[in-house]
Image (cartoon, rainbow, N blue to C red; front, side):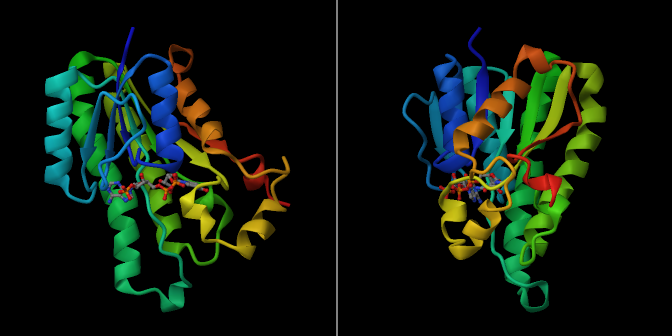
Amino acid sequence: MSRHVIVTGASRGIGAAIAEFFIAAGDRVVALSRSGTGPEGCALVLAVDVTDSSAVNEAVKRAVGELGPVDVAVINAGVTKDGLAMRMSDEQWREVLSTDLDGAFYCARATMASMVRARQGSIIFIGSISPFIGVPGQANYAAAKAGLVGLARAIAKEVATRGVTVNVVAPGLIETEMTSELGAAKDSMAAMIPMGRIGQPADIAGVVGFLASNHARYITGAVLCADGGLSLGQ
Ligand code: NDP
């Protein structure tokens, strides 16, 4: 049966690959991003800044009005603003926390109500292995992504009896616009990946597809690392 899937940050990178995965499976995908673009075949593409809770609520209301209850919410929109903590500005800290953590909460809250009413659904947050391995320059990002784990596990218990699962996928180093600016640091990180290659957005889309599927119906509150072994350490 065709599911109603909302993907945030679907204009490019990992979010676009996730949207394409569900479209290929015959699902109805709603793509959200600031630019309001999304891959071909989306049922609805909306320009929404996830840091604006009213805009998020409005977008989800419109999606539910047009496509019915939300079956899957993939909360993927995120940004980085790297810098050493000692020199990190308030703005650098706030921008990352407000997009990657506050925005994720707004999207989860807005989509959860429809799932709880329908007594089924799946919320999947896109986290990161950054908080687990400790990446210099990512205090803001690591704090936001670590926060997502607590957020997901608390919500997972709140909605477990309603048939709604809540999980986190934690990618390692993935080839997207976000990592294109890393330059030489990217090559040295790539050299530490046990599987010997940087991940592709499709590597993450497959994991999300699994967590949204019936095969994963007994998994909730889990953090699934998809990182080629990078978080195993040296
Ligand atoms: P990209 O920079 O390629 O894409 C980010 C997406 O988020 C874009 O669609 C962007 O669209 C959207 N976005 C950013 N800010 C907002 C906002 N305020 N409101 C709505 N949409 C927003 O990043 P990736 O695809 O690499 O990353 C996707 C997710 O995966 C992020 O959460 C990231 O932290 C996580 N991740 C990525 C890794 C990697 O190596 N690439 C590793 C681990 C985790 P627009 O600009 O149009 O708003």
